[in-house]
Image 1 (cartoon, rainbow, N blue to C red):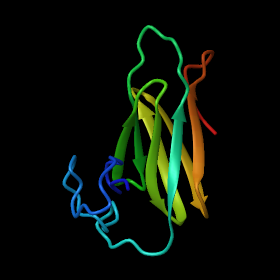
Image 2 (image 1 turned 60 degrees about the vertical axis):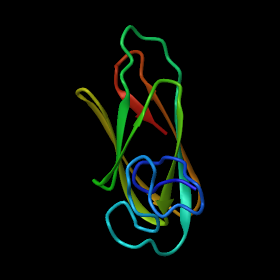
Image 3 (image 1 turned 135 degrees about the vertical axis):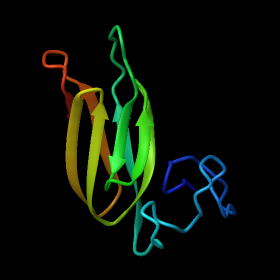
Amino acid sequence: MFCSKCGSEMAASSKFCPKCGHPVGQAANGGVTTGNSYTLTVNRAKQWFAVNPAVKIIIDGNAEYKIENGETLDIPISAGAHNIAFSCSIRNKIVNINVTGHVTLNMKWNRLTGSLEVK
């Protein structure tokens, strides 16, 4: 089981996330979770650059995560429309998705333009 706020793995019997303290059964926006719950998997390509900072991921303006170079992050997400913002320094990418099942997004830096690519 994963925390709906920070994405940390926790025991199924947990009442609170051991990392951030968020109550289990609460959506990241503070409401009670309802409906179907799925997993949003974000794969960040392993790329070699002189500087490779973490990319911040913000879901619906509330839940915030960070992903490092070459990492995969599994985030619990409810069914429905979601706005997912990726940002690092001055580079930003916003993806709008409609979740009806498990979703995988692949993220990398474009070597020519320096922009974030998310597919």
